[in-house]
Length: 297
Image 1 (cartoon, one colour):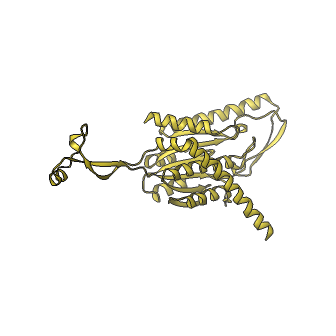
Image 2 (image 1 turned 90 degrees about the horizontal axis):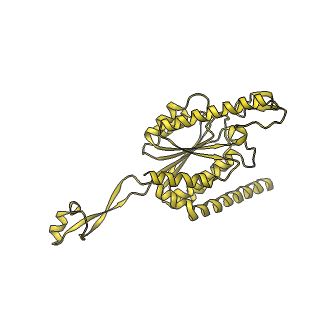
Image 3 (image 1 turned 135 degrees about the vertical axis):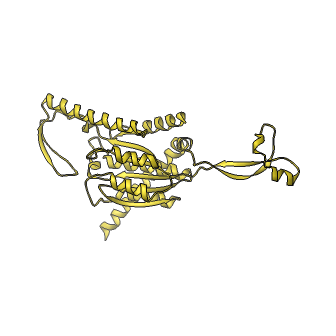
């Protein structure tokens, strides 16, 4: 029982730490950039007010004007509320990290930052944790307690499966999230097969932003002699000699080719992408994305 209490206390400390860090970042900069970047779905009527010089004549409500004996116009406010979904890849490849934090840990902190940004903006937030199946689906809601629950799930969910597939997530976004939503898909995108059809389906129905989290060792092998590599999702192993410059060049070339093809798919489908790495601070990439997207609107 003592071990259980210690584990719970450790979980609460970690949640509190990530809450304090990400809430601070939201207050200082990211929250305002998020607000400027993502608009609501139209405008709502709020009230009437007396006509002022410079107002659009076509906005005059003639029924109210006749009733009150003076010109009145309709006052509208922008619909700010969005529905946001964090779709996070929790397959086994996310456990890798050669520079300190794992990809999974980085995904969790970025997801927490986005969740608190949505909370500050009074948006609803939902969560999808996926492997090659849906591990967890939490419908979108508002509120601090809800966001803290999402962060707890992101940090401490133990996946039942190890491999990755996008089709189940596409199905749930297409059939169970009917309202057009802002979908942050956070993954290393190490999916088997062609992603184009699945990505196209999501991007047609929702505003999808891909956040790709990678580790530098996935693109360049160090000269470490003979090593045994294991695919964390399939368990398949291979022994290679990383002292060979030819092998390292071939590995780097194949990794670059794969990344180029993935980026090409995102561009063809007009899906915005944010590239993050376990070896660098994620804030500059987020700032650049928010400012660039706001400037393009």
